[in-house]
Length: 389
Ligand code: RFL
Ligand code: PHB
Image (cartoon, rainbow, N blue to C red; front, side, top):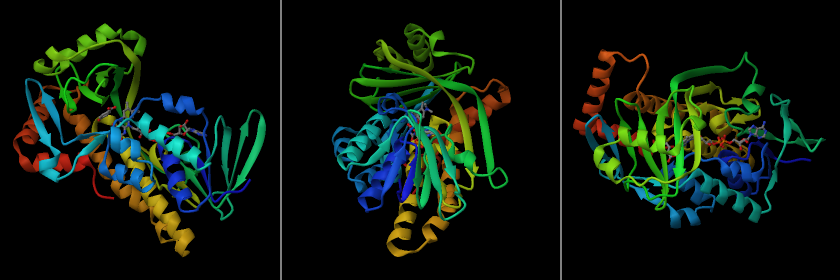
């Protein structure tokens, strides 16, 4: 088989890149290790920057999102006994969009199917060959039969545990990592959200987040030890702990119900550099991870897709390789700012096991400064709604 761009990974990055390229007449094949149903069962991001929404519109896959999404003009931050609101609209003139990653991925799969996009599921042993030459190729197995795709470029959109990143030799690759000594236990429940905006809450019992997917689907998280497993937490224990970590006025009106999904995600900051090696380009979680506190993971994946799509279009349509040559530099410049924001937001609101009385006073002072200072709120808001591409 031959294609122009072989895409490893059928998550949001791979699907969006494939669809944008296809709409411009560039042929792609997407290789996905799991089934479509499995990819759609993963509950992840919920908050989208307007840059992401614009990209979905450019790909002509935003109709359902435009109809069903919720626009959020601000968010509530609470810490101890005090709370305040960060008004995105007033501070930046912009907003974020609440629409689940599951729905984004579903819309992308439907759009790919409608255009007869080539997606191969259940691939095993995907291996990228000769990425440092102009004739790369990818091999893989499906049901025991080996296949080969010759291509011009390979896009590594296969997430943090994929194979693409490790194809880049260690002599070229530099990795930066920070692990956090806790995870997020998340549940999804068919209950109305406790508030019409998200609530990020720091408390002496640990962090909590009240989020949502729609008027009857809520997503809640609490910080938990890394040694916990979802089965350690009954629904009742989760609700009780959540209520103890959020302001009383919300705890009193929170409607609980059975969880329909429960999972724990460890928190990590990670960046690999460079994001390009020869004809292989890394996109999204394959190249970088942020702790979810800033809601930046999927949004940084989208900015990578934007830069790579533009670079590849420039290459194929104008014969100009400047965009792909500068891909890694442009993508990383934006990513490090999202890494900084996600790390700072995590530090602001979580309990760290080694925090002493001094650290707690500094955390309180950081929260107070944010609450009292318009410029500080403006900086937070600019980062939250998304820095320009
Ligand atoms: P994905 O989604 O991991 O998709 C990668 C795909 O590649 C496949 N794959 C392979 N395929 C073939 N061969 C191989 N060897 C392969 N290895 C892997 C996988 O099966 C998978 O289908 O990466 P992608 O596309 O880069 O998308 C990234 C986002 O999923 C991620 O950044 C976000 O979910 C992060 N995130 C959030 N991001 C936001 O922007 N806003 C949020 O509100 C937000 N909330 C979150 C989050 C992530 C969370 N978790 C669970 C980590 C909340 C949570 C709890
Ligand atoms: C979510 O709704 O899943 C969500 C929202 C905001 C975050 C992280 C996750 O910062």
